[in-house]
Each structure stands twice: as C-alpha cells, then as structure tokens.
Length: 337
Image (cartoon, rainbow, N blue to C red; front, side, top):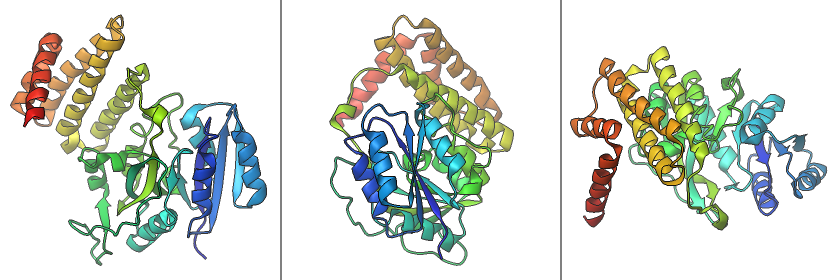
C-alpha cells in the first residue's frame, strides 16, 4: 500500500472558494490521503463547511483554532499530521487530479525527499492536461522519466535565483518527506513566510524532483488585483537577510554575489514603495539604504557585482532620487525596444 500523504489546507475567509479547493483534493487519483482542514478562526461559514466535509469523508480531519495567520495554520497542520509526506494547498487554489500521485511517484522513482511541479495562474477554469516537457531535463545516474528533472541540494539552492525561481520558493506546489521539517516551522506573524523557510528544507534534502507540468492552480480573484503598497512587505527583508546569514554559515558562499544582488534589488523596490505610499517612514527607508551599502562591502569576500550594478547601488545609497530617474529612463527605453 502506498504511504499516507497529509494535505494541509489553511482556511480563513474563503467561503466562496473552499469547496472547489477541497473537492479537487478529494478527487485525487492518489487515495491514501489525510486531509487536514485548519480553520484558523474564520468568522464566516468556513468552520461549518469544514465540519461538513469531515462528516462525509473519513479522510478529512478538522483543526479549529484561534486566528494565528497562514504560518500558524500551516504549523498546526504539521504538528498534527500523521502522513509520511506533507503537502500544502491554499484554500482558494485548486489542483489537478494527479497532483499528489505525480509528486509522490517523482519522489519514489528518483529517491528524492521532496518534489515540486509547475503552477499556473487560474481564474476558475480547469487546469490544462499538458504533456510533460522534456527539454533540458536533468536525470539521476540511473536515467529519468520524460519531464522529470532531478536537482541536487546545491542546484535546489541555485534555483531560488533562477528566472523560474518562483516555482521553487513557494510552499504550496510541493510534496515533502515529513522528516524534512523536524524543528522547522513557518515564522508566525510574517508574510513572505516561504522565503524564510523553503531554503531550510532544501538544505535538509539530498535532492529534489521537478515535475515539469502545471498541476497546481494559483487562483487570481478580481479582488486580489490591488494598487498601493503593503507595509508588511518589510517582512521580506527580514526573511531574506536571515537566508543570507544562513548561506554564509552553511557553506553556500558561491551564491552570495547573486543572492546579495537579488536582496538589494528587492529592497530598492520596497524603498520606492515607501517613498510613494509612506513618505513619513524615514526610519525604514534609511535602514534599506544602509543594508544596500553593507551589501556592497559584504560581496567583496565572495566576488563582485557587475560594474553597472555596483555604480547603480552607489547612486541609490547616496542620491536615491537621481537613481530613480535613471532607472525609470532605462525601463522606458527597454519598453520601446
């Protein structure tokens, strides 16, 4: 019999979408499932819906708790899960019928401790049944299946900075061996919690398998298209700074120039968000400029930034207004090409 897989679904204010999500999990071709619906103190009809599913299907268990946020809900599921594997699905998203089976078989066939798949933005439509891609696939010494790429621990870390890095950093398009988590939990009260956690799981895995098909649907609701600036984006700085310290401590030093550049670029974007929407927040703006300045020094132990990038960071630290004018001009020129 195949091993038990625990699917953890945090639930909060998703009454409109919850049934679609849970139904997609109940319809999985992989049947040996434990489905943990973590009612995170939802004030709508979600708690009753969760209990309804538990009464109808013995594979469903409900955890009712006071609101602790997404990280707290995931952590509650991890703590109570009984499966050999864990998977997270956000409650407004949904998955293809072979989501679990494909990821499980990828782990088993390659001897990997985790697996992941492509995801796509959806608006409620069915996920396409695309054939797996084969170009550029990496395989184990014993060969590999079409559309199945195997990444070493080192390569998993490197993929965090790849153009396809979004597939790797998020929590919810993956299947994990339970023991990977050990003492690892998602940080309470933070957004960008996957940025602060996934690299730790990669560090504990010998390798990971990538199923090159879109098996996960990331739902884009009309209300999610918002303008403005969320000050909680500052959590990203905290999580990624800790990741840089982790890289230094655990020997991933070849990644530092690339990681420091990505860190600086992300902080600069947040800086100008603060300028536009929180002009009174001088303290965090100054902190960002100081961190970029420190990054210019820190990179020297491991390599260097490209010259144009280094000059740009110098301008940002000393005259951010001029930097922005030049950056906008470059973006405008690139847009015309």
